[in-house]
Image 1 (tube, rainbow, N blue to C red):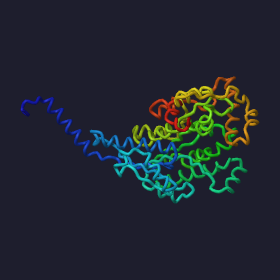
Image 2 (image 1 turned 135 degrees about the horizontal axis):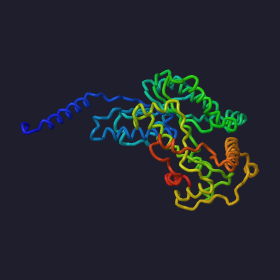
Image 3 (image 1 turned 90 degrees about the vertical axis):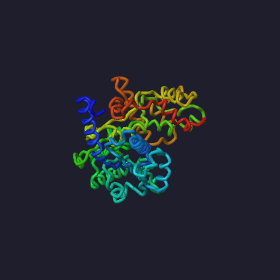
Image 4 (image 1 turned 60 degrees about the vertical axis):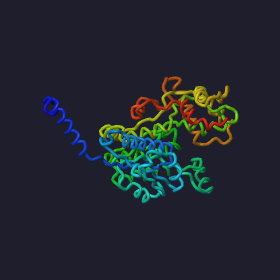
Length: 381
């Protein structure tokens, strides 16, 4: 039989054998990715994506060709959170103990705990933390400072702690989740204070010492639940707020985009091309509140309405609202002004460039009606 093989076949077979030998002798690169914090919606989405890819690659028939083996390190402030969020991760991936590690007691205010969590880590997702003061007294102080019970500048300080610890521990690449509000720090001083110092730190103190990318979160679709779920559950009607156009984004998409930059959706050269880049993460469409009601209706499966006579001016809304949240007041004041400007210039209200985000995400951003369908339980009824 061997004697009957043509010379071309012999050459072909030799080349195939050589390629197989090279492949077998090429070591798989071990990569450890930390997610701080794993209890954030974007962090959970990132971990889910990374673990799903790790499990799928191992199960594939050509598993020997896997160039990277990921270990995902989910970091949490409390042991209970670590246990709770483990149940939300892909069960198939958790069967392999090398794929996932949980790190409880990681506190962004405690840089030593961050250093411990980031030891041996190659890449990291760092989500801007939200610090809620633990006592009534501290809440009162924060409210007096105009932060509605949340220390915005303290959040920036914790983000910087995470970045500093990552640099000290030799992390090679980070993705930081920030916010679009840095585009208007003068008009959004409360909100932008959470994020502007972090971007300044990356530019001035980190530079090229490690690779970094900032995903600027847009107006989250989950805000529609936070603001309107109670009203929709009770009367199938959204709360009356000043109307404006918003390109809301599914926060899960932001986590998936982070995973693409951290976990091998592309080669290292692709991820490196996003070094020192800022990506505005927005939804695929600009919607008025009436259109938002229609999208929620399509996703939830029942008719949701927006008030026929919403307050047309911010002053009207303030008069109708008892002690409006200072953060929401700042946000709607900005959007009302931007809406007025867009009516004369034709521009958008919030940063709106879905194609740039879609490129990293690997698909078009999630439609609002799909998000509503996935979260219909939140709206009762």
